[in-house]
Each structure stands twice: as C-alpha cells, then as structure tokens.
Length: 131
Image (tube, rainbow, N blue to C red; front, side):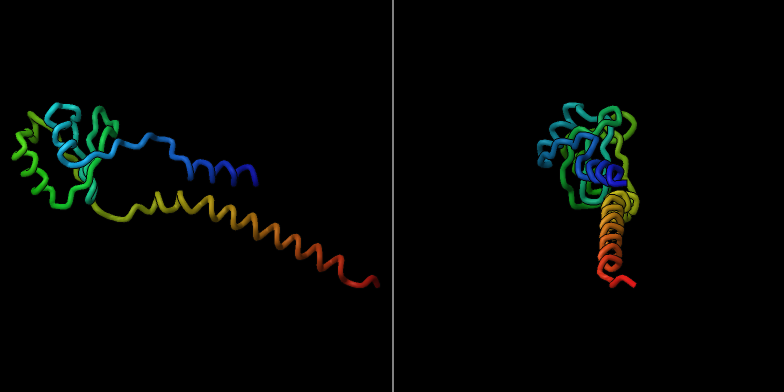
C-alpha cells in the first residue's frame, strides 16, 4: 500500500504530457497567421493552438468567442472552413482533475491514520499492567 501511495503521489506531482509553450497574444496571432496551428481551442480565458491535436502554444485572452473571432479577422486570419477552426470548451469545474489531485493525498492520509492507530494500540497494550 505504501508503494501504491508513493507511485500515485509521483504521478500527481509530475505531469506526463508536455505543457504547451506560453506566449503573449501578439506572438500567438503571428503563429496562427503562419499556419502553425490547425485548431484554436478556447477554454475560459485561455486559448490554445493545436496542430494535429497536439497542444503547441497557449496564451491568455479575456473576451467572448465572438471577440476572439473578430480579433483574428482584424489580424488577417481566416476563421472557419477555409482557415483555422475554433473549438470552444464549455465552462465548468473539472471535478475529475480535482479528484485525481486529491486521491494520493487521501491515500497518504489513510496510511498515516492506520500507522498512528496501530502505534497507539501497541503502546496502550504494552503499558497496561500484567494480570
């Protein structure tokens, strides 16, 4: 069980997938104009450039999807069938990610609880007078 807790903790602390490069909005728009992305994914206030479903770069953007499309068109970027596709992720809380983060902590807490309980029980049994 200890080995399982250590492995779970290691996987939660060290992400397995590479993180996209963080760039400013102007650099991101330049990359879109150069065709480095085939899809733009808007997830709240983050936009991510994807090429063949691989996350390449991301930047912050505050505004609606319509504002984002207008920003692209003003920058000379074609959006839609003949240009870059925009994929909008629905807003909401990601409970799965939260649970994956807390499971190793819960396992570690349970392990500590069991160790302390067995230690306390051992000390209580050894301190009682013989009959």
